[in-house]
Length: 175
Image (cartoon, rainbow, N blue to C red):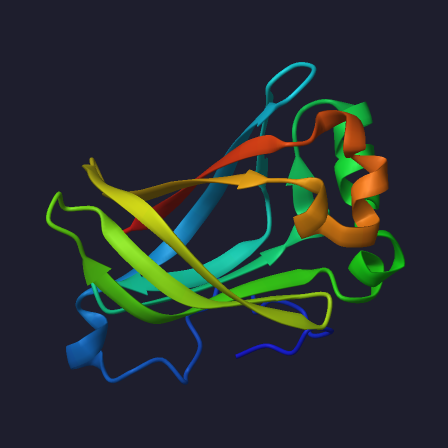
């Protein structure tokens, strides 16, 4: 939908290329993306990304684009460290995009989500389980993953003291 260098659309991802209205009835748009990082040594880091766009179509498809330079933890030191972790590649290509290729519901109601993660010019296949929760005016999809030095490659040296870390992500979607 958007190239890595393009700005996110002001409509939050609700572009004219969205499906016909009859399919859009089940589509929910991303309002907010929060995270909690439980690090190996040190405090828990809580924050959000201020610039996100995307959608989730109930049990069928999902797209999410995040401007990772919009990270906000409420702590200038953490914000600076997290923004600089990707170095020059992050500055040149600040958008991370996830596109699902398959979503299926497991027996316990959890979603198994498979797709592609495009970050800094690299596309990686990813899979995760997500818990779906109905909330007052929409849905929450929550997932967790462990991040280690090997996964981060060269950028891990700036965060080495905090790895491995468990990252919990909650996507808030409107109806």
